[in-house]
Amino acid sequence: MVPTMLAQTGLAETSQLAASNVIDAGDTNIELVFGILLFTVTGIVFILSALTAGRLVRPHLPHPEKETTYECGEPVIGESWVQFDLRFYIVALFFIIFDVEIALLWPWAVVFRQFRDAGNGNLALFAMLFFLVPILVGFLYEWRFGYLDWVRSQTGQETPDWKNEKQASSQST
Image 1 (spheres, rainbow, N blue to C red):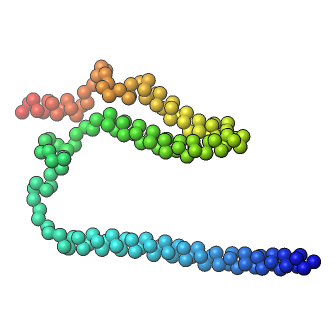
Image 2: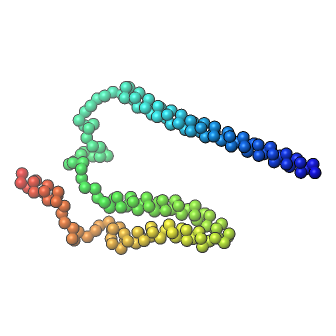
Image 3: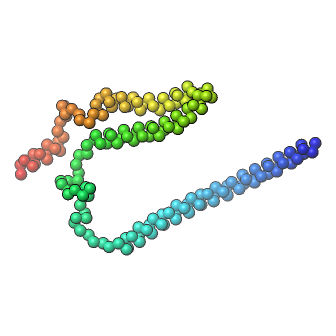
């Protein structure tokens, strides 16, 4: 009988503590929001003060050479508005896609054995295939139509109008 009363008394104290924690939880959220806001404002003030101090301290010596586009020490030739070769962009996109894919495959591979041992191996496998199949289909599409070839065929590609106009104006002068 005594252990039952102690258990009931302990249960009552636990429920009172839980109720008091619920009341304090609102105060904690306000303190948390205030702390985040204070941290953000302090960070912004530090950044702005460093930029302002740098502007006041550094010398201002304008020179035409400083205004030119920097190309790794090479002298600037022509305009900076040139047509960018999309092959570099495609390579960068594929790197990012497959880099993220590997980053997501690693944790899955680590826990796959646990899922398999628990009898949920098929579920884990289909979950990853749901992620991998669209990427694989996109990769095969790009490969099939030659978008991954570094040197593509020039047949059927016309010269853009702006290039024709530029060539005509350079020939007339």
